[in-house]
Amino acid sequence: KQEVTQIPAALSVPEGENLVLNCSFTDSAIYNLQWFRQDPGKGLTSLLLIQSSQREQTSGRLNASLDKSSGRSTLYIAASQPGDSATYLCAVRPGRDDKIIFGKGTRLHILP
Amino acid sequence: NAGVTQTPKFRVLKTGQSMTLLCAQDMNHEYMYWYRQDPGMGLRLIHYSVGEGTTAKGEVPDGYNVSRLKKQNFLLGLESAAPSQTSVYFCASSYSGDLSFDGYTFGSGTRLTVV
Image (cartoon, rainbow over all chains, first blue to last red; front, side, top):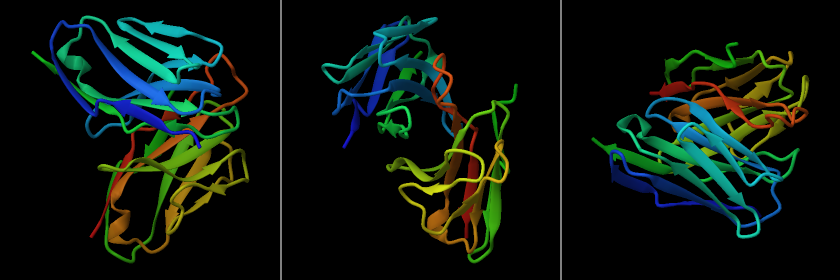
């Protein structure tokens, strides 16, 4: 059974730092992996989607990598800003017709 | 392009009352999902649909019913609300045929309180 883990559960860093959020999954046979952002009291916003054939995706200051063989994905945030404060969720889709499996998320706080 | 729209955004119910949450998507997505999100529990799948006229149970289906009469709409019903159903409900959709973006799109949520 696929399980998705995000460590740490919470992270505080000073503004301007580069940071990495981690996501690990137990079964390397995945269809795609999606990173979401959730602000308090709000819905989930899709940040990046990586198909199983891809190694990374980039959007602005965000870069997500995927290493299926090791069961890991990382979300790299460059030059962090207070507006980046949110909960970041990793979700794995095992197969094309499967439902995604969420990690519990990392709550990020950027200190001004 | 509105994406996924949920109505209402907030609702307070008394125990035993019924209500329907509406999810509408304008992306021609085949698949639609209802989740609930509770502190410390993460997102849990209630019911889902793989196409018009189809529904299936997810992880926590008890106390809820769903219908997908039209491709663009997915309704979540609570027949007799209980305090344990106090939660934030999210609808999502996806379209497995478009490999350029075969991910999930979420609505902004419905905050439901049952007193």
